[in-house]
Image (cartoon, rainbow, N blue to C red; front, side, top):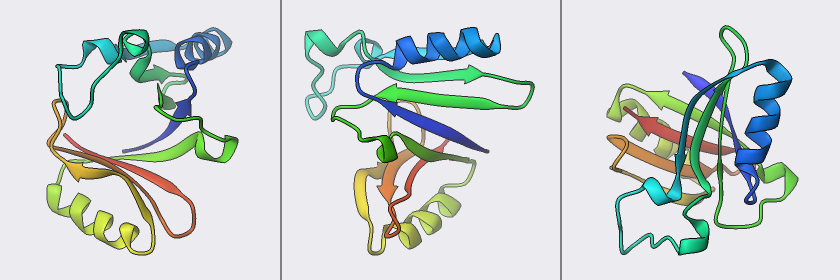
Length: 134
């Protein structure tokens, strides 16, 4: 499944509330950074605990968007990435290996508390891809 993933600078909740209102959409999920299990490699300061780690909004019968607040100031072109949800670790690793050549890894493809594998890479053409294996 492929869904647009929108990256925000501390305004994801506000933006998704606006999009929900505009499309009379259904908020499928909203998780905050404060909901994450403690991890010394990814500390969350108190002022960031209410920021959105992950949101999913159903806009139409088959149209969804996802989003989160990032840890950096995103420029307009960086605010959208392509989220690819796969059911095969092998398929994810194969695509990852192709796209990382000449690109920039934002987050290594690795197991997380919410998925078998998750990672983000910007390819050599400047397109950011986010992989999740459930």
